[in-house]
Length: 251
Image (tube, rainbow, N blue to C red; front, side, top):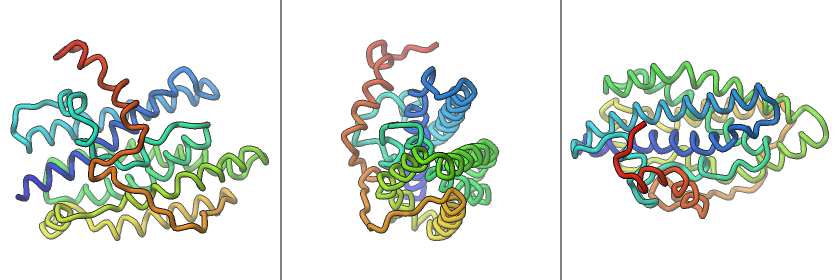
């Protein structure tokens, strides 16, 4: 039972990284400036790299002979457990940066806590990923401040992004029976602790950016249970095309 719970947990981490990496990859060649085009693409590659390590670990836990390519490319939509936030369209640059900021502010304290996990391999993956994630948060935070406290239009676009994306953030802190088992054994942290740190980062950055959190309490979820938005199928059609068209292909 513990191994099943750990597999579920690791697959969530993997799917978050994979789908957000795929989304960011759509910016390749379309960034607002050359330096940022390269930066976004590198962050996408970091996330894909993290997903490979996590999928490899998940494959070991599952022990059914699947590898990271099969876990990434050969599952159906309802088998993915990523949060709805990461599958939302890129929109404009402000939308992409606010989506990234909300995710980075969550993923950094989570990885920092997972470095203390009693599951050695999970702790090692977190330790390897945390340096990249610190850069990701620094990058997205600086852009949120720059956009929010910039021109009238950049402020308007950043605020519109917050107003749209806020409804998806609560799902980041999803917990079920699998999480409770793992928390009791010291394998993973309490989400309440991660949420407290996330809220602190979000409030500090948005205050400096002169941006406001929306007053509504809408909460959209379902991704952690395999119920996705209308965007997910389109993402998978791009992501999975080559592997499904040419089974077992490798570069």
